[in-house]
Amino acid sequence: MTPRPVVPAFVLAYALLLGSSLITGCGSAGPLPTYPAGGRVTFVDGTPLAGGTVEFRPVDNPHVISSRGSIQPDGKFQLGTFRPGDGAVEGEHQALVVPPLFKGDRDEVRVPPQVIDPQYRRYETSGLRFTVSRDVKTNDFEIKVKRGGS
Image (cartoon, rainbow, N blue to C red; front, side):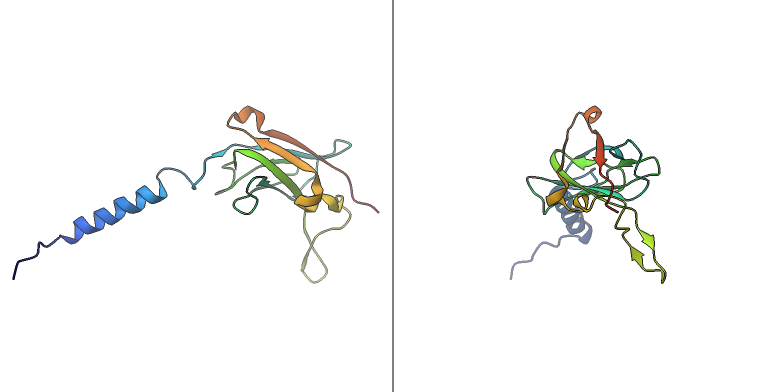
């Protein structure tokens, strides 16, 4: 019977750790690089939309990754993909805008129907397209929305 070499546990653990870091990569917040992106949402008359959410999804791969940002009282937003404010992946994106939510009579959360035109709540109908670039100076987007009907 031939003796088998014994591999110390720490060598095996180190090999597993090294292998997993090579698979997942190191130093990034996610598997794809993101670039700072944001902008401002206003009504056509220039009044800011105070509250709500903006969401971007890549045109070439809409089911993989999206980025979103909360709209501030002045209409400004910063997109985040893997964590708040880290930006969006490079490429062309469709966008949608969700109006601010409010609490109803029984504390249920509701979308106010008259704040913005409902077309902006869906990627397929919003008509909003933007290109996120590595050149972050170009990633400041103006989103203009129409008010909802009465």
